[in-house]
Image (tube, rainbow, N blue to C red; front, side, top):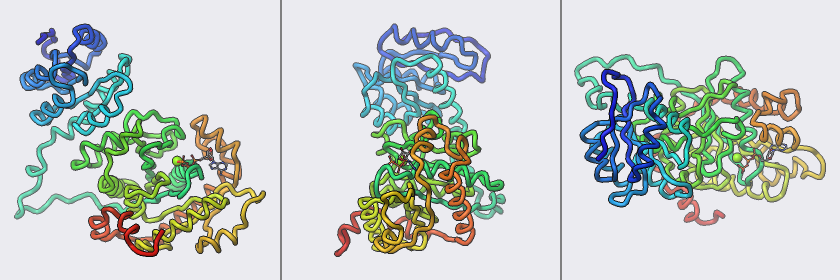
Length: 432
Ligand SMILES: Nc1ncnc2c1ncn2[C@@H]1O[C@H](COP(=O)(O)OP(=O)(O)OP(=O)(O)O)[C@@H](O)[C@H]1O
Ligand SMILES: [Mg+2]
């Protein structure tokens, strides 16, 4: 056990307990934090078992935990600490390449994962961000907040019914993320609409790159707290883009996609619908249960295709799946991207093959799309006058007109009874 000095009488400081078995590392961490006025290192522990004792004794706000320790590893210690003290938050530290550790840490309840070596800036930012999430946890338990039955309940905020629009393509690289990003910006420009952009392409989501936002906080931060999901927590995790759109980014690493179950994704969308007018959701092209959960929870699906045979073939299969699931086909808008008329398949042929009308067309402009992606400046901000941008604006107007007509409620049984959807389809005869 190592005792560290701490100044008295500064109540609002973030109280940090350092846990690392290497004395030099403990000392370095302390040095990195010593000039931060709002952070106070209240102690240090030399191993997993010691950290449990020290956390009990000191009740820190944040435990800075090393993952690899000889006696009891950081993950087991984290679990024990978080169970004993729900007010404490955990930041895990590890060396590079520990992808599995990262996943297990998040599952154990860690709020942040720092890969060594990290800078003092990264460390301090992580501690402050995690600490900002804390008041929600310190709120009285829900059971105490609920009014007794005979009392008149307090007026609740009026229920908003935002519309979720999912972009899906049964083939990768067709343009979902490009269109999702710009569509969100376009919808936000129309009047006073609150727009959220969600990256549910969980493994290799690109929205952070397309918007030039760092994945400082992502959907993975919601995973350990999905049961307590509320507006405050969502707001903490979503990142503001200069366009006014709020983005919920995909996890920073592919293996962290497993942290989200389909049910969690439904919950997040339901909560977002109570805050935002429009929720634009980007998805991955595999038709997994997660993707199906998103598609089911959406008011509109934009099926993005490009004019080539493999994509058209997959789009046809996609419609068959949706039909087998009794998903209303009129809620699916077919968007033909990368239209250039040169050597492409005729639109009538596409419609005849897919048996669904093309609702919207977006020009092919490789140069503009690529520049936008590489610079992290969306088309509608950096290259608004190009036909590709104008086409997306037209799509946005068309979509908002359509959505005004839609007043759809998702039946409860569709939410609870839809686990293992894709397996259900594979079992039903005649499909795929
Ligand atoms: N209308 C367009 N004209 C030309 N190129 C485009 C157009 N839309 C998108 N692209 C380009 O196509 C590529 C794939 O786009 P994007 O990442 O948006 O697709 P995606 O469907 O999200 O792909 P992924 O399967 O990787 O998620 C990018 O290089 C992008 O710049
Ligand atoms: Mg994408």
